[in-house]
Length: 188
Image 1 (cartoon, rainbow, N blue to C red):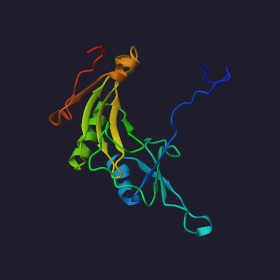
Image 2 (tube, one colour):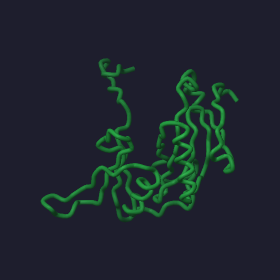
Image 3 (cartoon, rainbow, N blue to C red):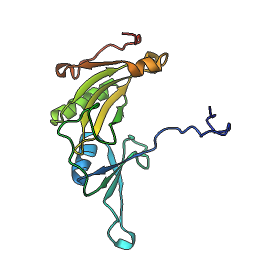
Image 4 (tube, rainbow, N blue to C red):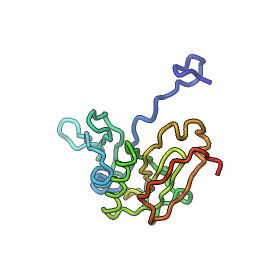
């Protein structure tokens, strides 16, 4: 196994995923979803050289409040993308990306965000309490699954990451915003 600096000749351990680039059918529609509904801030846009047209329509977004990063997400408008499925499914999808998880800082902000999305008419596909997150699954206009979550405190799941990853309780629509207890024993 490699050290974090790769000193044993193996790979160097990364600090995480830096950003995600998604191909989209309609840049304006996708901008509305990611910016107006999920709260990402547009921090840049691809421009052509010497005042010309850019090679492609591409926008860059950050999710960090205050100290903006260069970007966490980029959207690229592409022709010829397939129509999104009528309903997103975690297990029956044909998209190359199963879902993208968006983290909110705490339970209160997560609840405000889910309530906002619900008020905006965004379809809530699934509510699941995982061992390490409480999550709602929606989809963007291109059919990408989006997991809107808050992470439970590490002391809830840190002792049994595998158990937390394998724990999932689906909640009905009427419990969309219900506060549920944290589970620390995942052998249910």
